[in-house]
Image (cartoon, rainbow over all chains, first blue to last red; front, side, top):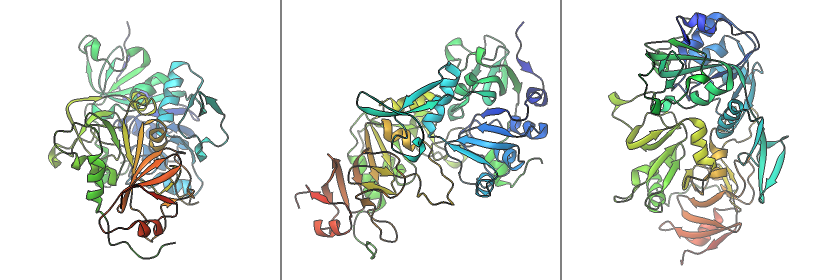
Length: 237
Length: 221
């Protein structure tokens, strides 16, 4: 029998090792798996490379993971946002690395990683500093930059509803990077607000097919990151 | 270098109105963060425009009443928005397939500098202590059919923004097709800037004095 349901967030992240590359879903707080991230803080794995669009805000979630010095390098498109102070401070002190990637290139590198495509050519960033040192090639009279796929050891993803096969649906714009990150990690760990019986999710509406998911853990009342930030909360509590 | 502050010209809302008036019925449009967001408030009645936001929504509607705001329904600026009837959600690779694949008709962006050839700089001043951040700007300019810039004609301290060559790091080369400023509407064609319309009270001579790049007057004034 296939049952990907795990009964605690601690168990779900227990095998994350030092030096791992971890994809973390979310665009700002929408879709950020804050409970899994907090569990990773408790777990303590270090020297992580994190692939995520942003760098978190306030002192909770991804920002707290960075503040706890567990992240060696960020791969992201927009590392500064309102209320984002942890990453800029460490970056200016030279204590964290940054690989800045255009957002669509980041998405496509992750998609390619999941799809077995090692590299691809994109028009984004041609003639800009973000193409420096990369192969540029002409197709049909236009220039394109070669970009490499990204794969991860683990993905931490937030969804709305899952079943024991790992089929997922998401909530509104919290979907963002979740579906592609699920495909590109060796081990995909998902937190779901609801877990339902197989067959409850209409097969026509499944967004992430279960084959891309390894573990599902229920988090019935995920925290609202902006509320935690507004209340000046800090993790660990 | 131009020193005095401009007191004539269009307001930000009037600039947004000018942009909105040029959007054809049925267009798929991506609006950048900041002044471009004002454009949605000025689309004339009877014109249907579908707004794309790169974080995964086609059919973005206006800002909700405060108690209806959903932190999982946001725009690219991470502000709460709504979804119109007929909207759809999708993941990031699909969203940038729409962008990079040339499926969107118009993108309206802000600018730090635009060159006479249509080069755009809008993501970094290159300052050594600045945290670089690019978001989706480089993908948008690489893929959307029409890139329109909406910007003040000069910087707050009176420096040129429409320049011969961008000093700031580029977002894209030869990508901008039209520029809406507080003083004029300018088309970029064949590596030159053609003035289509000037704000009331602006003369071509004055406009040229406030612009480093050479302008060609097509306004009929």
